[in-house]
Image (cartoon, rainbow over all chains, first blue to last red; front, side, top):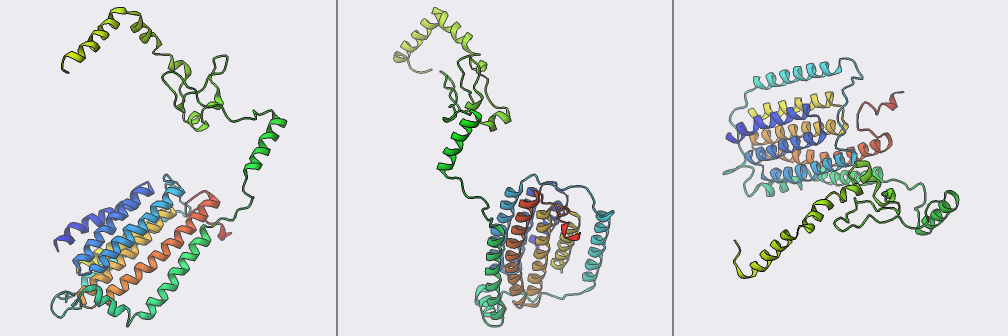
Length: 272
Length: 96
């Protein structure tokens, strides 16, 4: 019972969080909290098979599917606050609270008596929970079990049909790309060759450094448009910023001789 | 039987979520929460009465939930692909 009283507040708080968080990813993570807590409660309620299935199927498969779809649909697809039906939010809350009161009060009226339990001598779990479940599943519920397979294969085929996208235009081949380039060159005068590579300098050669044109201005085609849109492209003048201090170090001969001393001295002395 | 009370509370929270949230994926998560709440009640009653039929029922609920999630998320994906939106308010074209 300790596990229940520890986990029940966590579960209720996490479930309430699903109602209030703005981002769908946070809702998914809170749902994971609820489901893992539920798995622990199943273990407490002497259902080890369902404990494993809850972890594997719900938190492992279903929540991962949710997260995948969230990533595809866009993580920041948050709720709109516009009410299409007037007063719907308030009415929904009132209905929900009334439902909660009715159900909780109704359940409070019932006395359940002491729990029979599944484990122990003569219990239903005798000989193992999984074995007992299998006995039941393949005898009394065998027809439902077989129908389940039809359901699962229908779901798999349905998901494939829904997610499949028919290609409306033929795929562009390499020959098509070459023909398009030549056509662009003849009609619009676009440069026929490949794009210029990024600039290579003495101290910078990353993709965010633009190459320089003969007149000293940066070539816009030499950096990715994505980097330009993000504003993370280096300016060529920035690369020359540290020329003055470096030149100053070279100018001062005593610095240079000092450095030579220390370099020579390193061989004789130990490292400090 | 505090387990059943907890199950009822979780079910209610899920129902309120389905009614109030606008993001189709979050609505779907709330449906999952309701299914899980029912599962908890099933397992609690199986423990209470000392037979395994409740656990079998919870097992079947999980199977159906898995199939339902696959289809539901595929539908949400297709709606998003055509309408660029995951809001349940935007998918009201069948009304007119």
